[in-house]
Image 1 (cartoon, rainbow, N blue to C red):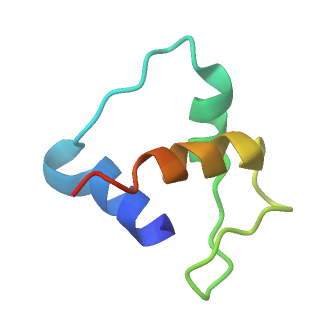
Image 2: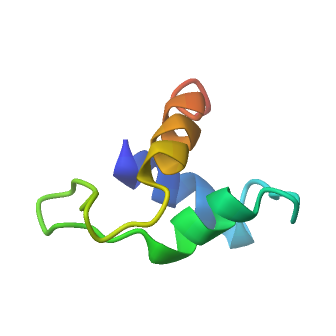
Length: 62
């Protein structure tokens, strides 16, 4: 799911926009750290629960 989220965020200069009022989500996206195995390092990421819910909401986007 992390690779899928990254692809949607970076594909052709970004596929979506995030409103600035979602400051926790923006912070989570900026501090997201991959652990080297394609998984999110939840101890190094701020607001990891918010980021997890965002990734789950993207699972039906292709």
